[in-house]
Picture 1 (cartoon, rainbow, N blue to C red):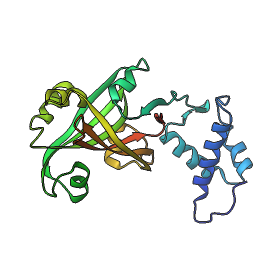
Picture 2 (cartoon, rainbow, N blue to C red; picture 1 turned 30 degrees about the vertical axis):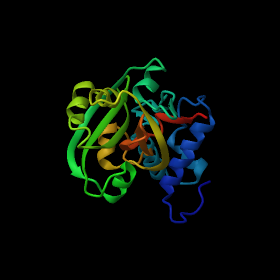
Picture 3 (cartoon, helix red, strand yellow; picture 1 turned 180 degrees about the vertical axis):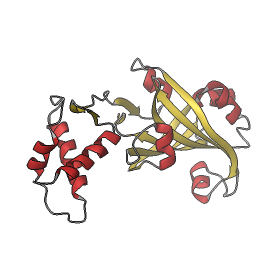
Length: 240
């Protein structure tokens, strides 16, 4: 039975309950009970059940087939994404026998905010190159990253990425053959409308947000990035 609203719409509570029911089945559930059975189980009307199922269908959790019923979608397993001193998207993806690719969404030159300047050891207002990139595995979008680089040190970083589709190769073209991760900070958020369009995900999907700083072999900051990983496609693995 679904309890009183308590500030949360009943259809959303029903959607959460069905989502949990599917997860608890551990892959054994192929098809949802009919609307009348679900309405009786959760003590709500069929319109509420119908709206909850529409939400789950928008999330890609179920699919409704006219005349046949509502079926549970089988999602691919999350990709394990190791995070450590040498985190590389391409290496992480190819190590799991998948094909990585990168695409430039947007780029530009802009002054450093106080926060980003502090991460890169620069003065506020220092010129930066900004790259926003989409990372995919086997053609499926995994993450969007916005990265900032000191413009004076890396004047050709945008063109180098556009040509190679790889931050690592672009940095190598700009004279940095190796670099290491200083730190990674992780939080969670709802996907933005713009990111959802590029990631081909539901409007209320959860993303893992990572803020990271990379250093060259002389321990000088070369890159600050904010990446947004789809939580239902990636799981982060921290190795010590």
